[in-house]
Length: 251
Image (cartoon, rainbow, N blue to C red; front, side):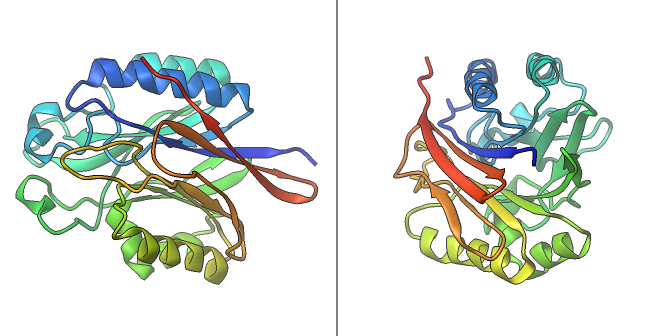
């Protein structure tokens, strides 16, 4: 059988510096391509860092030219990636916590449906977004607190998702509970579950790192050993899923 490789980009964002973060994303993209990754997920608000007070100032849309270097590269490499940034729709006042899926189809936007307490000071609740299909595998996306609602994962499963990908910011305190939920979704809904966490301090939060991927049935395939800039990779082959962790050097 053909292999299918997905990865979580455990990424450390530079606060508010989209240009630098795009360049760092490209470093991850190139490393992922070398390992055959077809679907790569970055953490919540990866292009800006988790900087709530800068949400409106840093907001972008699907037509933002700063996304074009990433789009061109992933299309050249035959990949799909998910990156995070505050999102505004043209002509509308609301700011959302957004994620952009970039791939052969172009750019699709996704907005966070379930806000973490305090996020509503800056951000409006969104309405999610479309599933994507990568190498024949339907993939549903959760943005952090979305996955805290069991109905979100259940809806993804009911819609036929094979992979449930969470773009997240998770602290040490929240990590045991949150990863318990994610492993539970893999088991209950027979989905592959991926969680991409931040690798360094962002917006005053100290993330746990330890990005991870679970196979259908809930068995953990791979987990990052801690924080830092890492690719957490899982490949499905004839004998099931295997995992690896690769350190990434960014400027």
